[in-house]
Length: 389
Image 1 (spheres, rainbow, N blue to C red):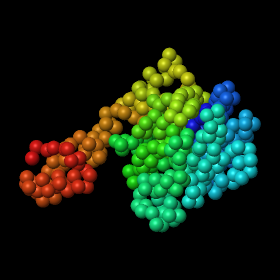
Image 2 (cartoon, rainbow, N blue to C red; image 1 turned 60 degrees about the horizontal axis):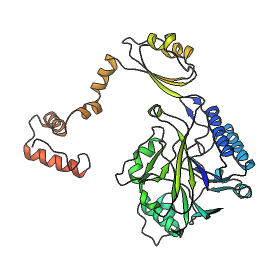
Image 3 (cartoon, rainbow, N blue to C red; image 1 turned 60 degrees about the vertical axis):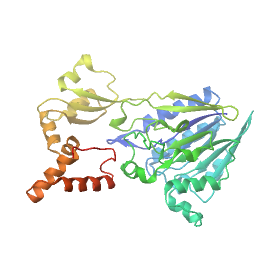
Image 4 (cartoon, rainbow, N blue to C red; image 1 turned 30 degrees about the horizontal axis):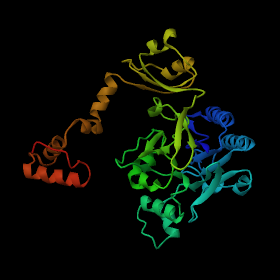
């Protein structure tokens, strides 16, 4: 059994008002080429098909063409909804699609959707778990103790009666973390993903009964806990923090039970996303200009603000996304930023300054110990942090 794992397509997305539709079509064409050349059996899409709950007409046309081409190639498609998708809109026509081997599971209804495909080693069970909240699972199983996302997903999987001796694959769109709790964000996730990630977090051991977990939700490609529990990441760069990433599609080959091979096939974008830093004249000198069609984030180090810098840059790099400055003036502003000051000073120093400003006297050692204890209980200080007191 050989399948491609995709996620977080975000079809219809714009970056700094630049539509990514043509870039997305170009990437999906690469997927189709691999499907045709390498006898792929199935394509998995782990949520966030569209960038908006009400996608644009262009976005719908692009995805419709992609599904049609996959169907023409007699490839099975297994797809779940993500938090950016409208489960009802994405579910439209799903019964008709199923007749063509395109299987949607967009809304949790108390059961774990399953589709079984066969190869020479027997059945491979694909379980489809769309983006789900704890309250949704609790609605169907009020008798279960469900107080967190982690407990909700564990209940949903348990009710699916997965047979661990069989070959099993799950598609899920959740915030999954390993034992360390660390997940590398891509930068283009919605702010809510980063801000509530700890609340939504579920343990990767939820998927111990699965030979492969095809995850969506986090935009940076990575494995979690073990190689077979994997975020595919976005197929394109959508944020300045992602310019150094190499986007890829996992191609998974399953042999008999326990034999899982993963190849990360790099995507080749129509236009790359890059960062440039330096003085304007230096960056735009003919000998330094390359791939002018790329998407560009610019950091200018000129001390003087250049009038109409964006227009000047776009004469050479028409897809310039953003221009910022890094010079003595901007660094002075950063140093004046209270959040930056806090990063550079210890907790005792900050509390001492605060106490002097509030009470016009020095904080005592006993009061400092009390403030440190409160800070540790609140999670501001780590238990291992030591001070001079």
